[in-house]
Image (tube, rainbow, N blue to C red; front, side):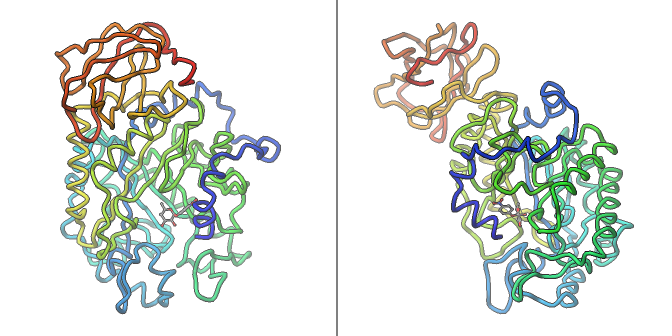
Length: 460
Ligand code: JFZ
């Protein structure tokens, strides 16, 4: 958590740092060219929008204990409950309402193209049927079976990609103990037990690939002092040997001073992971990143937390992220019964309604050609086409676009058969819009332009 606090306090600085000399310190883990990496990450970049799921034993207490509320997946650290007592939540984990096809439908209807679910969070409880540890859902719960493989299968049936979160730090494993009296985070390692622990991690990750064919490994909990950059690099090599095209996030290694690993690309792992924030600007075409965010204020199910983002927040965040060339991984925390909270479903539904009309301005697009935010909204682009996301509809019906290109055709995605009139003035293109915005959250205009998009100097 220290890192979290540190990073949010100096978030702008974190993302803006350029002095760190990654090349001097870290040797690359693959010989891949930028074009090869782009091809391997194609599906992931094109997807733009994914569902994050935090589900584990912490879903049972739902963030509440002895009158205290507002906790979630950090429950074990925050309550300091003895291990033997925490383990007993397993007896109450019986998600009889779990319907993987229904979860996938919720994601798909929202316009999401992939799912990333916790296979094992800091609590150390494995959510799949594993031979590598007996602290697992199949062995310890009345439910008696794993939940990841069915979700992976449901995702593939619906044409969605499937990925898994995995915590390096483990609050339950005997190799580790809390560094501080009142917290389990960060753990310290009993040095003589590290090799065995890393071997177990590898056995577990191999199972995840075999059982679920996981396409993303989304590591976390890498800030512990015993997990070195060399350990992270070794892990990347190990996973690539098992599955060459696997996508791995940058939290597989903790690059101190490099924070999200985005200012210099991602020296270890494939993509940067700004958390609960959107970077102020993009990072250029060879830097891959994904903003992960909660839909309320917690990752795991937290019954008392009703501070939900509005559909407008979600849609505009997705647009803002796409306009900067990133992905959006939006989280839900299901209950121990296996339900995604209704308030979350409602917001995802509303997002899906927007995406069904405007999705082509998000999927497989590139960052905005305009370096500065546009006064009325955002932009994305595809070859020959510019998408304008209008947040603030012009009162005089004229939308100014600081663009040198001539516009061959313009239309609202909400009204594809009605061309918009276009003109020019000294500041570029002027579009004539109807009096009413078709969508109060964001209305999207597609502009067909010839040749590469050339912003006017003031927008560069
Ligand atoms: C981690 C977890 O501790 C948390 O429970 C959740 O799973 C989240 C997705 O990831 O939390 C972090 C990790 C990194 C930062 C902040 C919180 N960070 O780099 O700022």
